[in-house]
Image (cartoon, rainbow, N blue to C red; front, top):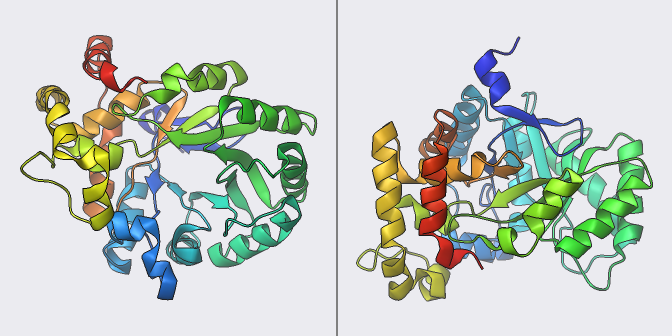
Length: 326
């Protein structure tokens, strides 16, 4: 039986029957990629996870904290991430969110094969949340959603999501699923204190109107909101070092934000990254999925559930990051 605290930390994903924690675990760099999979952009930009034992620890400490939602994708490391997540969560009470397709050349007719391949890698009979990873102008959204609806009716998919969809594309997917009596549960897009576009492009408003959960990826802005980086201490990794958001000018510009995060975090005996995650969690329709390479990171992320921000603190952070509301 769930405790009152555990119940408060859970919600339904959109209008689906899938009950999820208010924060998830991003497993993008998990697994043991081989060959060309080792050159996946996520691996080269952020580096891989810290080995199977640390990944196992991340699963265990997350679940102990009531965080049992793990997000991955067929495309991550060419299936290696799904394989590892399936291995580590077999027989456990977890919710697995994954994405299709496994390759960029994809047609709606390929969907049934994608489902079966993912089920095999995850070693599961059904997928809790199945998300279309990227919209494609050559791909009919209604036609694809019909295929997904068939998988739901066959018991292979429990809840339906999309990822990186615009407001218009999300509405189209939602309308197609409504015809089949199935809700669109979520849209996974980038959202953080340093990437507030969903507030101004209509995404948050549309999610609220339609009853769709916004799953926020990169909720710590690729590590920028952890407070670890500055103009004098830039992140490693070739791709991160050449991206504009990791340049000295940007790192200098975010220091007032980091300062405010530190001030608020000290009040609660927390860390800046936990306050940044909590800012997202305070919005009831937003669910952040910070990545975790090891048990310590997973534990730190889950601690965002252990406190709340005041409305004044939420507003102060919002005002301090207005420059990123575009």
